[in-house]
Image (cartoon, rainbow, N blue to C red; front, side, top):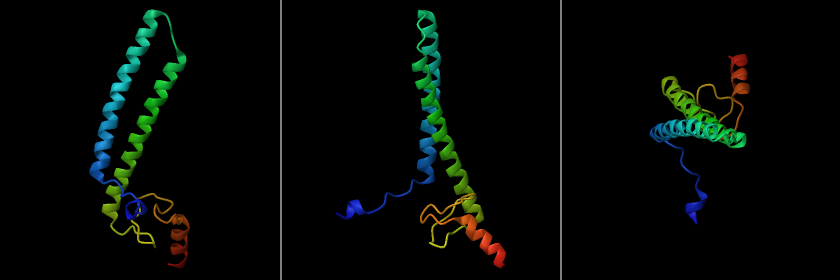
Length: 118
């Protein structure tokens, strides 16, 4: 039963880079398919707007996830450079974070209190 009680481990930077690379390849494939689909609809004079919108939404979702991964990787690079970005609970913090990813503390309030007292 101990297998199910532990939290899943956070993905490593190499896992994130691998996922981003796969997403970019998938995005390129979907983009080409969208162009082919649109051309084929034009040739057959049967344009299905709903299908195009669905495929475009899928492309936007893929790009959003790739951007999210890029931001995580950039934040991890900033964290390594900064060195001392640690929350009171002990969790590492990404640059620009407003809340602790582990405990949910507001980091904006803590930084304002630190500036006021210091």
